[in-house]
Image (cartoon, rainbow, N blue to C red; front, side):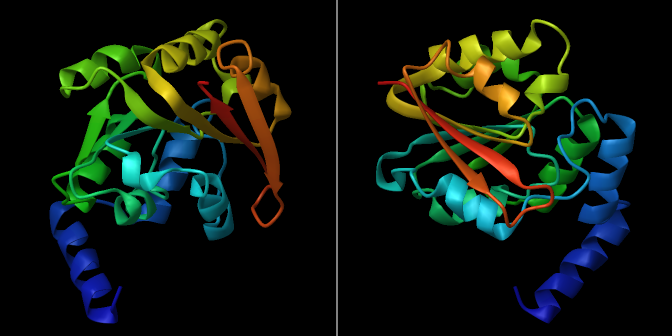
Amino acid sequence: MTASTAAARRQRRKEAGVPSPWSMFLQGFFKHPVMVGSIVPSSGKLIRKMLKPVDWANTRLFVEYGPGVGTFCREVLDRLPADGKYIAIDTNPDFIRYLRHEIADPRFFAVHGSAADVEQIVRDHGFEKADYVLSGLPFSTLPAGVGDAIGQATANVLRPGGAFLVYQFSPKCRDFIAPYLGRVDHDMEWWNVPPAQLYWGWKD
């Protein structure tokens, strides 16, 4: 992004009364700490490692839970085929408003809703299955039963061969992936604040 493009974006944001990404992220964390996994956005190294296993050429629908201020959004859109769609689901209306203002891409849809309702949301956008689902939701702090509901709904909505991509700061999140998906790969990203657990749950 050039300096002039960044300046123009800041001006549009100011005119629309939309806060900066850092302001939005901090506001979201302090207003809804249970739903925001970290006070610091994910690092570039984490993003690249998390997305590396994705077969982009055969991706028609990519879904994200808890996109926040869109840390992953442009990275995904840069890789997504021209005929692909990207649905970002968040329970925080402030984040959804921000994303709708910031990302002007016809492939991108920011949805105010719950990840537990992903099957209906995907159908509402003309699909039966998703190729990949990405999540940074803090499973270990979600209300009782919500993590399991999300794990089951995600397994239901993924196509065979698809994957649930999860980055967390607690290994407990594996408990909400492994019961629903046949194979779970794991790695760490130390160049992140804090270091993150990375999981890929495959629907074989």
